[in-house]
Image (cartoon, rainbow, N blue to C red):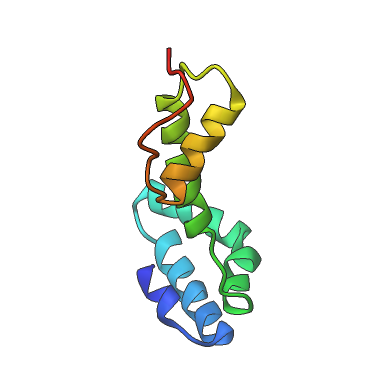
Length: 104
């Protein structure tokens, strides 16, 4: 299945997907058959990658970092303190030496 993303043409990718679907549905592996039917149901969405090759990996990575900062910031009393922590961690800004914030 990894080979699908190496194609440059949507038509060639669609042919590959059709061959792979036949192979997977004729295998004796029930999970493989289930995956094949699921991919067939979403075929148009999968093939849309070849029209618009955009992914959201960067956004998901930043979201994960933000969630980690928010878990560490559980005891912050104000949103401004959390915002400052997010800006420093996600923007890789230096921490101020002297802070007027009290972390209780």
